[in-house]
Length: 371
Image (cartoon, rainbow, N blue to C red; front, side, top):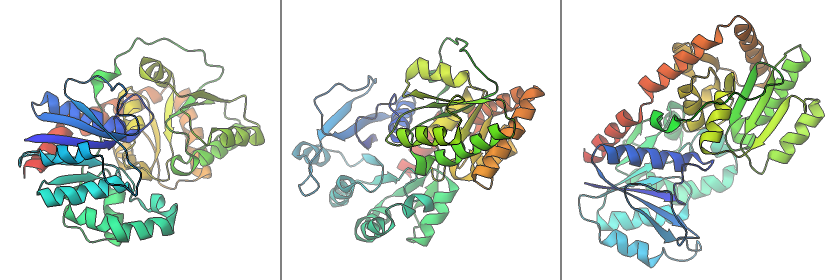
């Protein structure tokens, strides 16, 4: 069986894009398990270098939406053997709809992972445009997939309000511990504890406006910590302006986009990882932080809140609001002062190792491909 993972872009795991990371780690784990795997990417720059992997990464040129697919891509699909499966990563992408029609014609099964695009909050943004697109394209693509993989229960449940699917499954993202090897260097902390975030600076989806409001309230009520934000995005300027308005500029540190060992070292220097998302699939940054031994403060929308609560590795924000986040920050500082946070971090590492193991997830996906 040949497995093709199809992405928009190049699946570079060092970029601030969860889909890239998932496609990379899932395909790598399947390769280690002995599967014949390739990554195919659609990009405006197919001539550029790709991330080094022990199996092919093949790039095809992106076309304007009103044109057909890259002829080289169409030819490549026509040459696939009958035992091939195509795993499509990402939703609301017109090229992927065109490809799904091509695969149906060629009788090649495809698997579809929307990566959180069908969560309720995600769909509320540009609501009417998405509703039209879903009715015209996505419903057909969802129904014709051999399986639709949802990364969390919230998206799995919500899709039932849009379209009836008999082919839906929940399989979360995973974490590769071998990629977390780095030499730890202590960083200067002006204040303690350090609350941290790592990811795309997207106010709406990541709930960063609530987190800053919460941190402002926490500081106003005597909280002594500081906040580090790793990442970049179009909302950075508005978030910095929000900090100035809340008079917490000296307590909040925007570190910009960081990659590789530098990023890992900065996360490891945090005391707790915060992810109050309004909408997610299964955030890779949370799993990464947990694997590094950080306690977690997460919303239900991250789809790991229940596990965090059950495994006693942090605080589950059942009500995701600035008030609840501020309360969680105050609670964590008390745990930190009592030196109880270290056990939470150890529990987080165990949780990720046991429940979000890429090898086990890769095996499960292979079984679904073969069924």
